[in-house]
Amino acid sequence: MTGNPGKVVCSAKSHLTVNDGKAESIDINGRYVTVDGTGSAALITINAGSFDVTLPYDTLDDSWYQSYVKEHDSALQTVKTQVVPCTVEKDTALYSYEGGGGYIRDLPKGTTVYNLFHPAGYWFYVECTDGQRGWVPRWDCYIPDDPPGATDGNLDYSDATKEGFVDLKGYSSKTNYLVWVSRYTQKVIVFTGEKENWKVYKTFPCSSGANNCPTPVSITEIYLSGDSWYFDSYYVTNVTLFNSDIGFHSILFNYDGSVFDGTLGYPASHGCIRMTLEDSALMETLPLGTTVVVY
Image 1 (cartoon, rainbow, N blue to C red):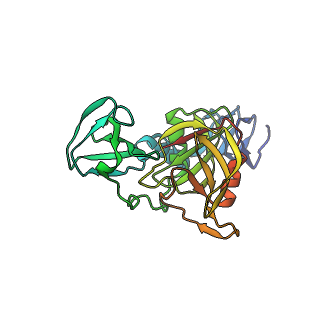
Image 2: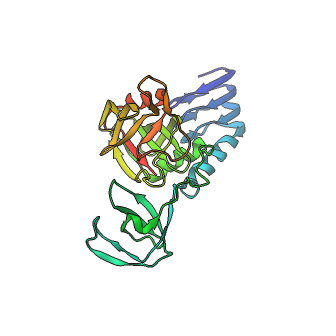
Image 3: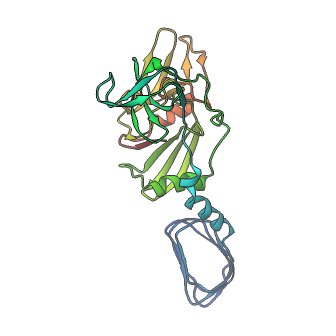
């Protein structure tokens, strides 16, 4: 580019060379932008990361970038997960296997454990306060009915924090999409991009598993979509499976099409991820093999 251009906007993966002139302003609005040349610019504004600017300038406005980087790079300290503290109501024990095999240690009455997974039956998988995990008889512990106070659906992270979390964790996907289910904020976040370069595409409200049967923390992938499930009093549709029989699906509907249970924003399901009809329909369009992170 030569002469004295006015405002120039650079999109992702672009290369701008300014020779023998001075640009009024240059906006860097995408990642992996290079700006160079023998000319100059009055103002360069940074609105994206991973840039290379060697062109002389009068003023550089990187306030957005500095704020983004701070939030992005501290995401692992910011992001939390849902915890379900449960009280041991009578002396019991922790076991390696569901059903009582592989004794680990005693759990005296009053001990606190955290419910990680409760399949149908008489046992559930827990984590002790020191991090040790194992199986405990279900009815030896009290599992609170109410959702954790901080998990009310009104919380959300910034895009910088969301992107920082999945980037710094190093999550990859077989497709150009990645999904993170945030149990703490009760949000489903869909990203586009690639490993260490994910950008938020959509954020949806949801309801994950209730305290009695929380959605397990996992890293899996979408393997089936386009189904509906029918129960005695209601049905759900737009089922997209990602972890055995756990998946995304719509809120609950009566058979006449009215809403049976439209709860969203706090843990309420049997382990699946409830979403609005429209949002669950979008999840069905994601390609098979898309990574799903539940945390």
